Each structure stands twice: as structure tokens, then as C-alpha cells.
Image 1 (cartoon, rainbow, N blue to C red):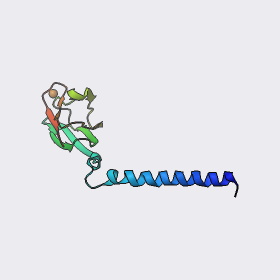
Image 2 (tube, rainbow, N blue to C red):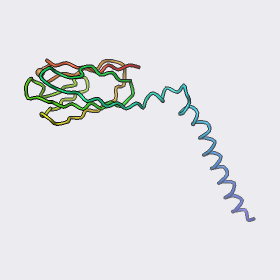
Image 3 (cartoon, helix red, strand yellow):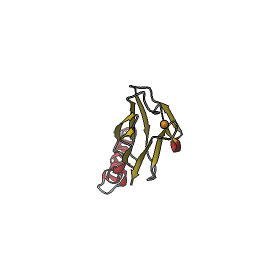
Length: 130
Ligand SMILES: [Cu+2]
């Protein structure tokens, strides 16, 4: 064998060792039973009806770090649910009757995220647990 071939084999062996070696080191914490990162992926979708009675459900519970999708649907022209406002997220959306309006966010801490109609009469909250 020439020196070049031996060099290539050594280089390839080192690369393989690094590849499998690093997997062996990092696979455990990522997939381990007690790793908190396992909690970060519980996407949740909740449909919220908006009528003259307000939001239904008006209270949504979810987990910190889990992507949340809220689908608002205004079912009646009556009442004042023509907008939904999330003050702490700087989100305001129009709610046309009969249309799905999707709002997505991932709560980064355990505080409650409240939402209201445009005039603040209808109230709802996203309760975030650890
Ligand atoms: Cu209102």
C-alpha cells in the first residue's frame, strides 16, 4: 500500500470514530428518560368558538415550550367578537364570521397569556404549566 492510501484509511477511520463517538456521547442526553428537552414537543391545537356569549372554551391549558395553535371561528354576527387581541403578544386579528383564524405561539414561561375581543368584553386565557 502507498502512503496516500494508508493516510486515507486513517482519516476515514478517525472520521467514523468521531461520528459514532459523538453519537454515543450525545444520543443519551437527548433521548434519555430524564431529559427536560423531551417536554418541549407536545404541539397542541385548540378550536375556539366565538359567539355572542364570548369565547368557548375561554380557558386553555398548555405546557411551557410546547407549540400552541389556536383556531378561532366566529359563528355569529351578534356580539362584539369581530376581533381577537393578545395584548402581551402584540397580536390583533380580525374574526370574519365563519372563517378559521389561526394564531400560533409557543409559551416561553408559565405566566397566563390572556386574550380579549376588540373592546375587552370577552375574556379568555391560556394557562401555561411547567
Ligand atoms: Cu367585545
